[in-house]
Length: 436
Ligand SMILES: Cc1cc2nc3c(=O)[nH]c(=O)nc-3n(C[C@H](O)[C@H](O)[C@H](O)COP(=O)(O)OP(=O)(O)OC[C@H]3O[C@@H](n4cnc5c(N)ncnc54)[C@H](O)[C@@H]3O)c2cc1C
Image (cartoon, rainbow, N blue to C red):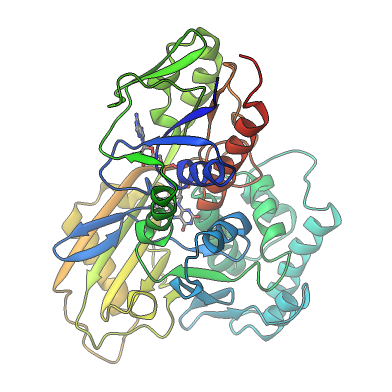
């Protein structure tokens, strides 16, 4: 029988699987519960603004995502490319140089403003510690322990490592995997200047890749059923049927479940063999991300597209005028859990506004005319040391998983989602045509 693949979920994982399978000539149908594609990286329309459900950045190290974007002919100018920059006004200014590795970082650290010699030496000590071990730790332990072992200074912890850890792993350093953090450093700052580049989308996250993927899939004859939640998967006579599939008589040789981990269980529960897998996924913990959008008057502009404003709440502040060209629109990112979660919305907006005001001590900053708080309570899984993550292949033959939580060297990111989708697609292609 012919291979016919159902993909459940049109986030970055599901769409990358769909494109890869289609590119190789397989027959694919995509089902997406929401009306909007992109999953946890999607557009949200509010009061005439096209916002993201959360401000994202990509890295030059996202090789598979960037390859997929090139294949889909996404114009490169849809990403604003910046050298790795840590800018905490009045405290730290560190910018990687356009030099071959490791000089891009070494030169950046040497020229950084706000670092003492003790800070510079500590930073290089950490990188040397990891490099000597080829970025493989003997055992996994919290990032905070890695920082203590390599005697990182309080300033580096506050302005560099803790910030990078929370940005990359969305998990506080005391609870985050040092091994995954080391993997991220290896493939970004440890690799090359280009790999450590920060890429800020100039368009919304649905437009960035999902729309281009849908155009390609549509032109290749692939049906994408949006607003179509799948409630269950059954197997009959060696073929899969989906509960919720509007094409009642359709059956599939393979199914790729490309949902967030917390949406997988109902799609696996008809298969007793998956009980251990379901338990494994159910044991995941999650961390939130809140993005506070503030619309100021058009004259308000930050000196950089993104910076660390300081203060206890906001980790990164983005000025959208640099990326999407919307003057006065700021996005404040608050990653991982923290006391801010107890604040009422108005109080949170006020505190973020205070934090913006503090950046302009010599001028009056009028309150924003408009604001929007978007909290994704389960933005990513908590990337704890030694976390056991499932593989794409489930115990059920030809039933596969894809998503940012699949076993990989990386935390939950767009890149890990894309890689898992490609991996699932390649696994399907290997088994397509094999007897059931
Ligand atoms: C606020 C926020 C900020 C982030 N910042 C960054 C960042 O800066 N850089 C970065 O790389 N990553 C970031 N991430 C992580 C990144 O967005 C995710 O890792 C990635 O989008 C996950 O993609 P996915 O395809 O694995 O899952 P998802 O995006 O969750 O996609 C799953 C899809 O499946 C659909 N679905 C679920 N159940 C069903 C069903 N029963 N039937 C049909 N469809 C179903 C969902 O609607 C969804 O569209 C951030 C995430 C959030 C939330």
